Length: 212
Image 1 (cartoon, rainbow, N blue to C red):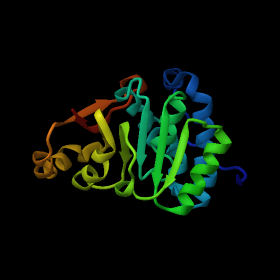
Image 2 (cartoon, helix red, strand yellow; image 1 turned 90 degrees about the horizontal axis):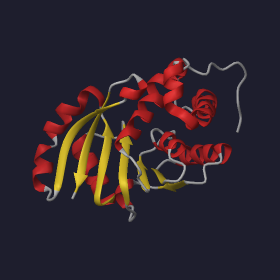
Image 3 (cartoon, helix red, strand yellow; image 1 turned 180 degrees about the vertical axis):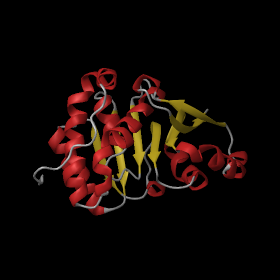
């Protein structure tokens, strides 16, 4: 993988955050370097994001891990540069994580990341989420689409008893309200808004949709 000289690595996490990340921290730090160099060179991450890779991207995605304890399988749709899929794969080395991404240059990047970080638990599929015939316990997404569209793409990929986790931030409540019509038509599903990230000194808002 090509790297550029003297590229900032982003604002470092605090000691407390580093400790909270535990054994995943060294690999996450490697991933930060890749994002700050190759992802920027390929246009997958804006140059203005370099100084906030840790707080805006890595820690923000790591917070989601609180909502997926002991998941045996995760599908990350519209994975892009691997957020949150790569982060979750690093934090859960025994969990099978499938990254679904339709764009070739992004899947090429993800394959490079997988190889460089030796992520044997990661599978990468080039394609649209709505065309997949796979399922997992947890389906994640971040900045992919409004919730009403996301439901149609995500729920068919969730196993019975599993859930959709969509990082939405301050738009969570309004998007949930806008998707209420679609939610009312669904059977055996429960939608709620969760806040996670306490251990990382963050507050990340997520829409959780459980499939009974």
